[in-house]
Image (cartoon, rainbow over all chains, first blue to last red; front, top):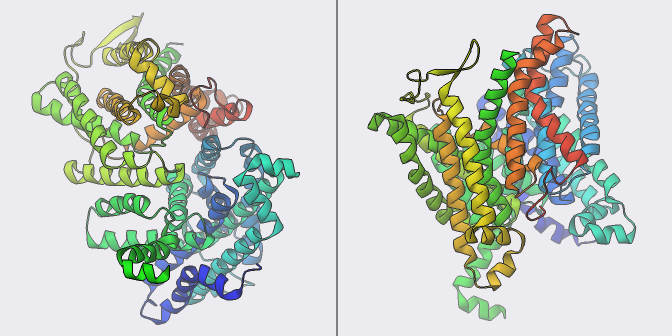
Length: 329
Length: 310
């Protein structure tokens, strides 16, 4: 936070431009229902991805069960809907609290392990949540549940307007991103990063990583729950597929593709994956034949993810023109 | 009682198939420190190639046999194209890249063979006619082919154990798993060792797919479910440990089959029938993961910790 303003600005330029583009999109020809619902999905997944990035990039905790928190948020909305309650002031806090509670219980157990074992134990809990939701017969079981109406706020159907929903998602996404960034920059975040870089040294300095990690895990879970509640409203349909391990994997891919080093990378990654999937699947039947190799190539040639791409490009150009390099030296 | 016996045999047979896939995954993970999500793809390809070649040649057994070299070649090609460049990268990059490989190969399979499940020839020539059965206890007939799988599943792990524990190549593999830098310094071409191990694991997975093709539907997503269970097997058994993988595979197979058969009945003792069926089914699917979480909680390194600590 001590860095000069223009440096901070430049570091986050790509994410900022993306957010501005998302704000302008409805007025630049992307205001129809289809485009808005697509963008809403991308932003909501981006929110969940940012919270996962907080764990992966910030705390070094690779969770393969993050979709469960999203699913629990979504299923809370659905359960209240089945009970005839759709007031946002009740539903949204409940969704966030439910996901945070899930994260607290599973995190308390999972955080005793590390590395690959942490990946697998979060997967195990995710699968348990998945099979639990598919056994809720009153909420449709495997077939899922169609939401009767979007969540109301103080009795008004404010979310029914797609444009309002677009800006609600955008605002929350920006909030999560900025909040996450401030958190990582704070003393709390420094302890998390220290424990990631060198757990032994962190211990020697007098920091027990466990409680810090648990708090981070619960916070990420709460944001996941918020994203899930929004997603239930965006699609007006919730099914166990939302909690499947492939969905958790997808969130992880968004984080990695965007770049683990910066929270903003998760936003880029989510947007890139959702939009690429959508446009490719319109262009051709076997679109994954292009999408799959693109993922592989991105790993091989963009080790820092999308956020690192501009820097890498610049370096490549410098390398290509030796005159310029000499001038710099 | 005979019901339980049948489920136990089914569980053994499923466990054996899991082991064949998990063994390669565990070797690759233990020796090269590579998380290969695309290993399930080899299983799927094995099943597809065996099914297609079986129909071409008119014999299931010939098709299954011919699928081995094909799986080996595909493994070599993938290693050369993609995985070779990932050994030095962190686990996250490996996960993303190998996921890209899954998408590509599954989509290619869909483009080549279509999305519908493939027809597979019945394995002929077993006692009691095609897919015939054997009376294992009085009044209980069990398919011979499934018994053959169990038999294969006992022979292959023994061969593998001999290969890894008693031969020079196996010694290099074990040494490469724990001290890769030292092995390399002693003049062993560690890259070639990696390639060989990788291709061998791919072949085992392809073999498992070929064996599974008459029993399970041969469809594009078939590798994913097996893959995730194989990771469970590896983590329960201990990363890099063949013996651990074998025991964990049987445990997972048995838990899954017997749980599915028994839990709904057990729950009926305390719940009403319809909710017992529903909860039982959900609980049975969860059982494997509950056990894994419990094992990881009490023994974070798995049952038989071996190889490099991950």
